[in-house]
Image 1 (cartoon, rainbow over the protein chains, first blue to last red):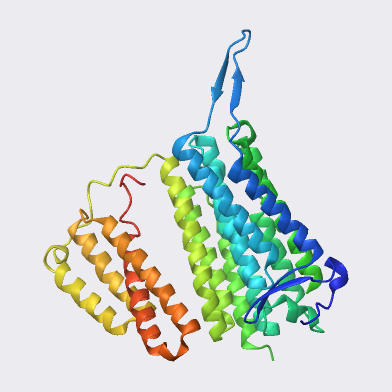
Image 2: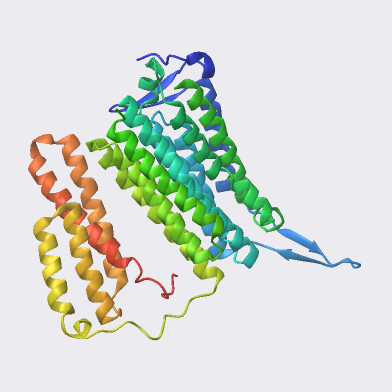
Length: 222
Length: 199
């Protein structure tokens, strides 16, 4: 098993999963993040969505808005897919795979937000969609520049190199993750917290938080 | 001497900067979507600059992610603007009434001769042309089923490579014909599903 050169940042890797030259790995740090994503995916699978209650002012009456049927199934599917993509991003040992998983998280988040069929929510989903399309430019660009200058995409190989990933590629990847991870801002803008279906909205925040935590680890390692 | 790679990067980043400056001025939502697609293409161009086999392998997932994001966002646009009606007046010229069967057949046969991913794209162009001219009362469920089986065959071919490498020729043939059917089916569905009950 090759050594991860800057293991002091995230701890010594204790599990590797090689697919040819793509070596996925767990360090204590990424294993914790992975477990976190797994936990929230399980919550999305097993919990029932929250029902929103609107109190009619001045009386004892209230409206209950539930999430049912097709919309429930779609949002649950998207939340689970988002969890899986996040888990993939957590254990990926390859820069391009990481960027692909990050953009998959973006697509799933578009799905979660867009399931609510009201005008201002769809507006927010549309704007986030545009941002996440644009964010794939620096993401893939950073990975491609890394490949062109160092000849490899493997985090293992990059961490062992003297030069490592060029600074411009690091900046680009960070920009890309910022673009995909801006989702909670749009979720807040659409007031999704006040829309019914709570556990699925949580997935948006969990996945973007975990993406930021992982990209910091990758950028410090390579 | 600056290397060609750096010159290419500078050109692409100039293009990206141009696209982003257009973004700042643009107010129309559809135009924004098109500009975003333009930016996406320049992202693929950065990958293509690497100019190795690996870069070619990276472009396909990049393209798939880009197209799926584009489809998702345009679907959101359609839902938001409540655009469920098919446009009444469609583009018609004479060749669209007389030639579709022949041209479609030529393209499909040529695609099958080419085989593989490129052949799939050529054959799909034939199928799309046919649908475009003849309208679409076809059974999409059938095309979807073909696509599903083709994907399964593709996977079978991969397992053949891994588990029984001596049957590689069988695997190559299976994978080549399956990806052909898969690409044809998928591409001919693009744009034809709008207005159906599952839209």
